[in-house]
Length: 111
Image 1 (tube, rainbow, N blue to C red):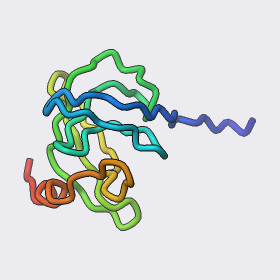
Image 2 (image 1 turned 180 degrees about the vertical axis):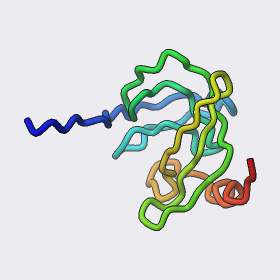
Image 3 (image 1 turned 45 degrees about the vertical axis):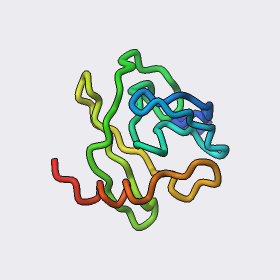
Image 4 (image 1 turned 60 degrees about the vertical axis):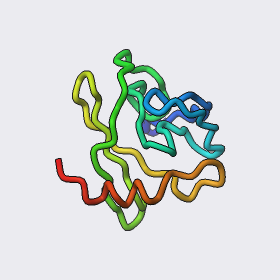
């Protein structure tokens, strides 16, 4: 092995959103970690998809950044411990794409 450690673990399961209560379907090609309707998440990962973080608190979307290669990137803040995490939006998904109007409105959010 060349010393490279894979930090991403695909864990694409559906869930019920802790914020809005809507049923969220699996993304199909990656680990969905936030609600496509309200963009809230849960602090469950240390590395993407590992579900190894014991915090487990809701994470609110505080702003959206734009990246020329990744598109929209949602910035979440944990409501318990304050950790900041970034996640690529799934606005082009075939199944339950992220709410584009909400993504755009959060690009102007100031913290």
